[in-house]
Image (cartoon, rainbow, N blue to C red; front, side, top):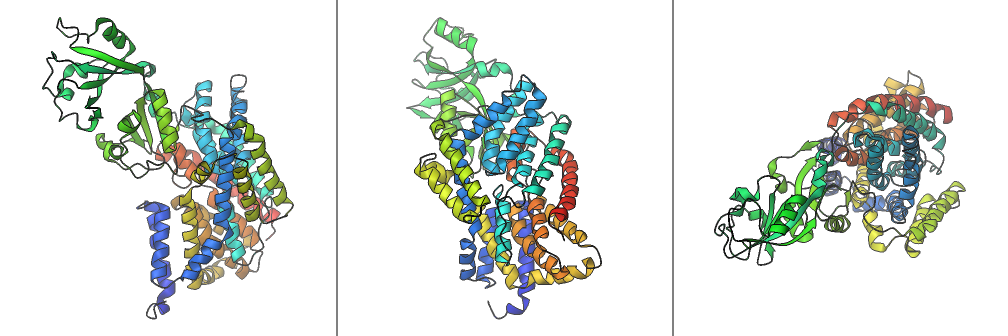
Length: 597
């Protein structure tokens, strides 16, 4: 550390932490970038060392979480999760209420053993399908799906990355690690209370339209066709986008092809000439008229070859969701060039429940954005597979390795059984499980590493390094010393409630993994200073850091359903506030009963 900074290290670290939390809350940059930048600044200032960075990377939490992402990916690629969910939703016609309740229970159970993010990704199109079966809007089911996954994730140590990270930080601070089912008694009670709330109150969710539901049903019966400009065309020398004929009625000019190159982004600059091919979107009846007459209708001419239809194909509208790790993230639609690369046309773009300005094609894409695209079904499917996107109207976009499903199920069951018997640390079992699904080809290497959300891994490593800076500067001890006199005169449950509420508040403002790293050491030291067992305090951090029901940005699964369900920002607060209060009261009541203070 620079000698001049040594006396001021606590204040300096506190300032950097404060600015870091503000940057998280305001989303100036993605959270992983913000955290890595803060860790780099601490390293430059000498507040942490290179060895501290290496120690953070050697923490078992990042490796365990990465391995669990891959195991979860194998469950997805073998169709295990989808088959389970579809079996449940098959009850929709027989008993709609039962189907909805069972789906939420199934999600809560599955989320205890798989990562929440890929699980919710899989469940979004299934939830939309179920909503259609029930005659509901997707907004009536998608938010409960996210919340059920969050609740179920608190039932086991491997249910969320937050649980694993809190356990890793606790072990670093001298505590004995948690077993896989140690938090299950409290977690299951909390999940039952939460899922019951979701099942009984679903009717109070808002009716929101998604982009695809705003389309007229006939939109799916539109066609895209190519029309050749002949030598006798009266439109030679005119700008295509200015010709009323090509944008009137049911027709919409999509592109002009010249010398085998599309010029869609410059339609207002190109004058038509012989040999150009117009890409026109129109209704099925209009296509048939063109085919039968050999010319566009409404053209006052005897020349049937003025416009020659070259080809046509059935087009469809698709609502596409950008998933974490999507290749389009950070690009604009202009840069992505979807028309040239995949033959699909962007029609509209939504972000966080609101439509963007007309210049949306110059806006950089983010996780959770939804695109309304038009094109042939095969082209849309090729785009979804190639860019790691989700077509929310189709549960399946690529073939599953269903014959490998028994292997994937056996791997996760074996890992859970071995962890329950404490045969090996969870990190080791996760690595063995990852090796098993790779060797048996339940998931291919490229799919496996694509299934890992490396942004979360980077965020966790950076936050572990920042946590070391807090310890090195003595900031944790200072905070505990300041809080202890205020809390020592009250029963320990008040301190437990304070830790829970602090974690709960921060997790709505910043990433839950950051909360885990920052608050866990404080919780441990506070419990020790009060002379009570720190274990219930650590459990309180686990549960509160995952209990993000008030905003769409506090938890990644909330962000995913935000756009897919067409929600508004305050919809989460209106529906999530009662759930937050119920879960908080339940948690603060249950935790001391299982882990006495």
